Length: 496
Image 1 (cartoon, rainbow, N blue to C red):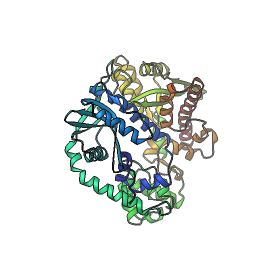
Image 2: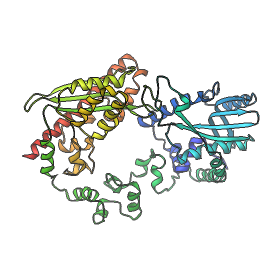
Image 3: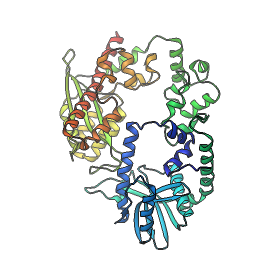
Image 4: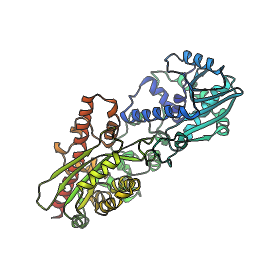
């Protein structure tokens, strides 16, 4: 039997679902931008972690695995040393070890992750490496996971020894050895029995989202009726699969089920084409709480696994942009202001905050869509880093009004919202077929994650590309706040 070539990443995919390997081979799915950004984060973290043990010998990438393995074998003879991307192949099972501590009496494996905690799949990854190396006759003394310490606060200089946590998982790796051998044999049999014209018949399950959301979810569910149980907004995936396994897949199958009222309402509106649900008293409460000037504001933020700025933690939300629509008095024309940081601004948070404070100089209502983000994840962190700005930040926070609340509480609901209170669903539901409010008509950036990745990529672009990206960022964020103005106008309309 021809054995399937298994890298550690392919092995881990098969731990989640063996069909992924078949799909990767015969129906490959292109990486989306989110996956590419995750990969780039992992690459940067991995490169930094190589410095943990001082000088190291790096095995450069080469498509020819044999060349990488030969270079590793030569370096192994020069113990003690540190080898990064050390490459090994046993019986068609291949792995590159992120950091290999090569001592005279054996080796230590250090698997680097950009996560802030150890996941079970990381144990499979490291244990697979232990399997390959020990079967080649190496004495593996220790296996460790290296991951991000999310409590680390950066000072003026980055301290990688405080940024990274190293956890010994040797015993767990050893415990998994029989499991790994069984899995490899199963994978080889599986691929041998399922050639290109023999697609595996694999039922979907919770593993489609654990430990990662599978890139082939849309492919594997393409024949399900629409809408189906997986389209119920907010329901736990475990509950969705419970109903799915019971054969209750279409909305009509779920119509008489005892469900959370919000889920039942989404199903009812879809099946019976209900009229819009508008609780006018709740809308009136929102409108009556507003005071001029009205500041409609939206932030864009990005995250760095490796904190870039003094006083910040890994994966902290770093605000780099806002859009602001202002209505000074009833009947006044709308004014627009905006801020977009330079990508290489070392004082990006301070400059963002000072610009915002200046633009929100009067005590009017600060209207946002999801105050948790603007207030807790951004504003409060700004006040922690810059205590001298706390008074002004607290003033802004005290004036925040969350326009999302009526939609989240289902005091305003129409079928087209599909159970969601995201502004990307709410806006087209309130203003169908309005090209001015259609995010898909934007040329470059259409979602918040795209905005974040676009900003993070600026320094790698040409000047012309940077200009185009910055224009796209401004256009996108401006639509977010204009969308809030339109929602406010709709509230005034329905209150009458």
